[in-house]
Picture 1 (cartoon, rainbow, N blue to C red):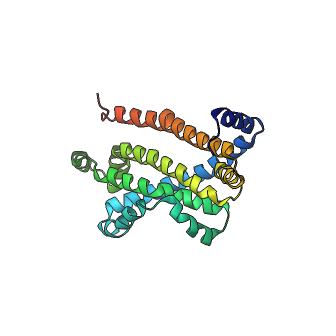
Picture 2 (cartoon, one colour; picture 1 turned 60 degrees about the vertical axis):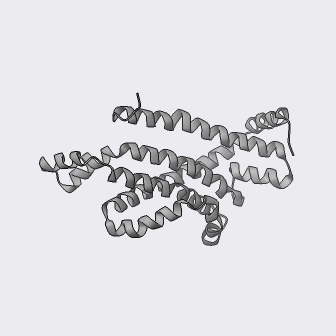
Amino acid sequence: MFPSPVDVSQTLIRGFQDGTFIIALQASFQRLLIGYGLAIAIGVFLGVSIAKSKIINETIGMLVIGLQSVPSIVWLPLALLWFGMSETAIIFVVTLGGTWTMTTNTAAGIRNVQPVLIRAARTMGASDWQLFLKVTLPASVPYLITGMRLAWAFAWRALMAGELIGSGKGLGQILTFGRDVGNMNLVFSIMIIIAVIGMILDNLVFQRVDKNVLTRWGLAKT
């Protein structure tokens, strides 16, 4: 039940040497990128709509707040009923995992644009479309970056939940296999890979992008 670090390390080495973990990582990241891309697109659209429309805010906006508290794994039975044990079911869970936090951050970014910027653009004769593209959207970029960072974290967790259905190849499938056969070395190895990838992406990619954006927008703490 509690394998030694040496055994886990050997399992990690063998898994990468024979290509098992590499193939699983490729399959998982393919699903993740598709679901994450859909989550960003849907989240930005919903967020802008909620921020711009009072009716949408009072209907869909309240629904999004409620859905944000629903764990990703709760969507798994519904995904299985709708799509069966397929790639679509996993991507569905991943997409929902990142959509709601992206929606709320986008809406917050649109709402928190400084009124003086909007008044200045109006004074210079900007149309509604120009106002959105050249003032509102750029001013909300820090919120969008934060939303993308959080959406990635939630999508990554949702991916592991979605892959538990055991369809295809991926880190979640290997984790399920290790559990079924009682191979704790394999289970701990996958847990380490999941944690390390999450840490690397957050620290080396999203934190740097977030810091650069905040610095450029003059929002970084000195």
